[in-house]
Image 1 (cartoon, rainbow, N blue to C red):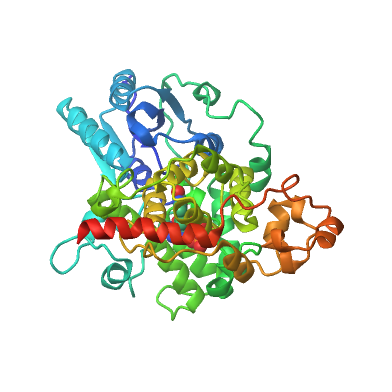
Image 2: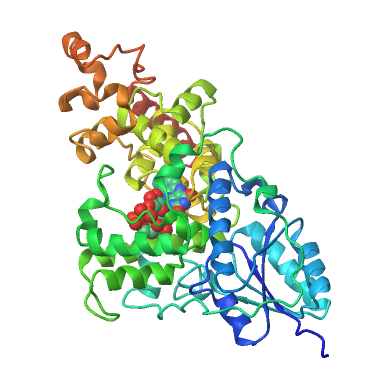
Length: 486
Ligand SMILES: Cc1cc2nc3c(=O)[nH]c(=O)nc-3n(C[C@H](O)[C@H](O)[C@H](O)COP(=O)(O)OP(=O)(O)OC[C@H]3O[C@@H](n4cnc5c(N)ncnc54)[C@H](O)[C@@H]3O)c2cc1C
């Protein structure tokens, strides 16, 4: 009897799907058995190892990936430990000669993957890596001088405008099974779920797996993309795709998202794009821009891109920070956002900008405190987009909102949540207040507060800072670093 054909290892990472997965496709093209492996090695991710909400998401996504693999006659082999050690061990146990994966672009992952590739090749193994996470990878995109972009619009115009990604690959119909499956950890042994039952509301908020991701994309394309230009700013409506956690875990590729939205909006590749769909593609472009910056400026997750902001006189105020984290600032729009985050692991983009501006400019807290809290509580936590979002809000990054542009949490609430539906949903203690006072309860006359059953300072806090005073203080703080620069 001839010995069993050695398998090709596919190392799953931020690409927890079977459709449009170039590493998996490559493995199937060899006609050899395919050995899917997932390695849990948070110590290799450094400071930005997955936070609590993301771990919860990963657990659900891995469960779905396992099911999907089983349905193709395959099995997900789960291991813990340093990636190189695990891959060497699995290759030795199974006789695998080839390993494929899709590239990641976080600084720690780049360093680890380069070393793993080098070592495995020196062991004599064949290693191939692919683009499975982005429309275009950072080294592909350069300005006319061959330099990285620091502003979104020129990058979009130069590399993406009028460009269409190729159609995504379908999932393989079957996967050749391995003759002797190596042993696998049980998913539960990774201990990704929270110890307290904090995930109950998140379980209600989300569905998991690549089927669910495609459903989200199609529903958005069909029902919401036409009104995206307006709808994307209204947090109480179904105005955005909610694809971010699926993109972050790779349950959907950006190319799949692009094509699913295009088709479900009734469009053909190459057809004239309605403004909503065009804008949605641009938002996918912001995700690309985020990775472009992360790759070219790898220090930015912890340090501002604009070096002069290193000297910004941030306040240290743990009490204020805790009030912000818990959604108890006394500003209803900010509190609704922070509570949506806690309840669902996600927050609407408009509200992310409002709460971030409040932390950085009203509470004068270092943006990194916000980035870390988001990192732990977002199911879509993504090092590129989180860094970009916080540095943008902090006024210290590429394409940043100038620091002097301070969001007014009351005005933003009145503009983007005029009927207070969003606030009523997440700050139920204010639910009975009339629209006029829903974003400024401290101005409501005592009779109105009493009729709404609100005792300010007891049921709901008074504002922890005065927005106008804080604004002036923030601008004065900015002036200090400007002066030092002159
Ligand atoms: C302070 C701050 C922190 C953020 N942290 C993250 C994060 O950790 N992970 C994350 O995925 N996004 C982050 N964002 C970006 C944005 O808020 C989310 O991507 C968006 O809200 C996701 O909702 P959606 O999928 O419905 O978006 P849609 O409006 O449907 O957009 C489609 C996709 O485009 C991408 N996208 C949209 N807006 C942005 C943006 N501003 N920057 C980068 N990509 C974008 C996302 O992948 C999104 O899923 C952050 C924004 C801010 C202001």
